[in-house]
Image 1 (tube, rainbow, N blue to C red):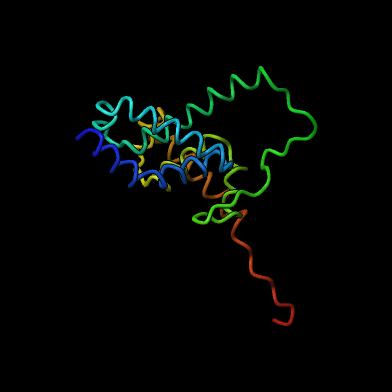
Image 2: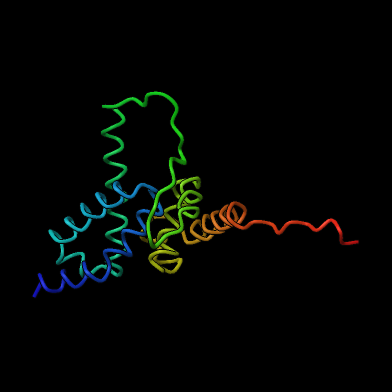
Length: 165
């Protein structure tokens, strides 16, 4: 029973979780690795995770926490050589617009996380706040800033016609 329940959860929610993590980290391979690790942890603790108010949010939060852990370990091991572009090369995903992913990567980490939970996981403000361990007002502020930044970057202004009076 436990195995079937988890299998259904995985099939139904893997892609949604992957898109949310991809929106936050911007690297397809890294996102897949993080989501795989998070689902592995979900399986081992399925009795607890299945009772969580939002198991999808648990998986995404675990994936993002795993990224931080990996990053902390790696920063001691490998120094960056040469120029490093924080926006990086465009990431391709059939379900996500490459321009959107590039714009998301330019946002501060917390704003990316709020967008991932609010938009990609469709959590409400309270659920997002609980998942990220921040106040609901902070979620609202980060989302507003992120949307404004994305709108400024992605929405092009129509060209002005010079022949109009």
